[in-house]
Amino acid sequence: MKKLLLIATCALWVSSLEAQQKTIAERLGYPKNTKLLILHADDVGVSHSVNLATTTAMEKGCINSASIMVPCPWFTEIASYVREHPGMDFGLHITLTSEWSNYKWGPVTPSTKAPTLINKEGFLYSSVDSVKQFAASTQVEEEIRNQVRRAIQFGIDPTHLDAHMFAVVRKPDFIKAYIKVGREYKIPVFLAREMERELNVKLESLISKNEVIADSIVTILPDMMASNPAAYYAQTLRSLPVGLTYFIIHTAYDNEEMKSVTKGFTDWGSAWRQTEFDFFSSGECARLLKENNIQIITWREIRDKLYR
Amino acid sequence: MKKLLLIATCALWVSSLEAQQKTIAERLGYPKNTKLLILHADDVGVSHSVNLATTTAMEKGCINSASIMVPCPWFTEIASYVREHPGMDFGLHITLTSEWSNYKWGPVTPSTKAPTLINKEGFLYSSVDSVKQFAASTQVEEEIRNQVRRAIQFGIDPTHLDAHMFAVVRKPDFIKAYIKVGREYKIPVFLAREMERELNVKLESLISKNEVIADSIVTILPDMMASNPAAYYAQTLRSLPVGLTYFIIHTAYDNEEMKSVTKGFTDWGSAWRQTEFDFFSSGECARLLKENNIQIITWREIRDKLYR
Image (cartoon, rainbow over all chains, first blue to last red; front, side, top):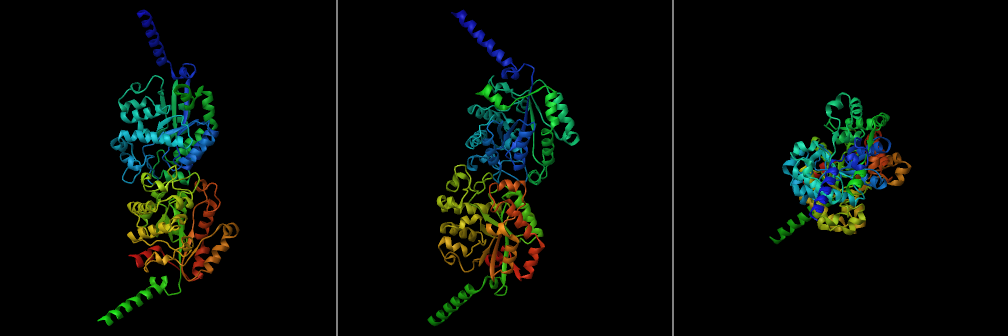
């Protein structure tokens, strides 16, 4: 009897170890060394320009996933779009900051219940540093939950959560709250190795083996945007590593509205977002994905195969 | 002694009667039969398109006064503009409704303290009827006060208060709250004879003799906008009556942003606002004002001469 129990325990242990050692590709049913890619647009809901450019790049271009900022002024419009396009891949861009100068928003939680999340004008802080310094993690947790609840109230079934300006993944207590709320709703949360450096925590210590950590993040940075964005995009897609890569993209039209939203900012500004829109709507993007044996996947696939 | 007292009382009574019988023009120092006009743009703060078009029409065209919707997404931008242009005539467009379909806002008062002002999604009601039916007048009063306080917090010294969609002047308790808050801050509130019909109250019973009631309101309505707006504007300015007339105007650019804000609406929609912008920025408007002996005045003049 004891021997049988030992064998059974060992078998379980080996099977659990195998599950842990399986790549994300294998867990999703792809060959072990597949290059998996999510082409992900951030900041949907912030403005009409972002909503229109992003949904256009999803319908006609290469963007295949996006995340919504629930507290922002154009949330209602994108919620309406999501209800009319139920198969598309929309998650929530958990938002703890309001970073532009003359275009602001507050939390979803009533201000009386979220005093540590807001500045003296009632808006979310402009900087991630202020969030780290002043926000109580209990209020952060409640705000994350309220953003999810509000999205659901508006008919959105979120495919994932991710982190606007990475604010919610920059402090151990915040990332724990983010993972916790994701689990409550069986929604995968975006996690990546890069986050471990600032957190000084191994992500494995926070999650179960069924959950997913992206192997790499790629995103254009100011120097490449200023010099040769086309070369950056092409090189990035040609040299994509095996494993799950998360391509973080910001799409908008460089129009009067977006210029004013981002007034005073060059990096991640209006022209920047038009450049990203142009590339990720182009035939060049589609060609590079095809030529380089890249397997596009969605958060919906991850959610439905591994989290539900 | 008694006789002296009687004479003094009579003198006071006669002087008070004279003050009441003086026209607004006389009280402001103009000849009795002057045609006074405020060319007033509503809805500033609702969108960037409205902000840019209205400030342009004020700087280069005929618009000489405007009012700001404090709860709206682009309030921060217009507050910044007002701080940079301290002499211009900006009041507050007291806002109790959020009338567009996919672009919404809530009250300034925290939602926990204004439950009768909001719908189940936390936004102000779409219709004035809902405001009349559900809003508690104590919460209306507090919301008006909070809109004024927030404007002051953002560096705006409001020249007047007026009423978005006339919501705040359609019920006796609401209009009393509006007049009360105006008095607290020594800010004139827009009142006009037309309001008496729905209220079933004489405005004189609500105000003191020092306060002002506009003699007439003019504003373009859907049938004229659909047929011949240029003729309407010209005819209105040519036949302007003696007394204080309030011209209610809605200026915006008919661009992608504004089309989406007003999606589904023709009346007071995006093209409507472009038509108003075009006329009130034109040389034709300036010429008509000059040719018809019209005295343009501002709310600032009324406020500083009669209320402070």
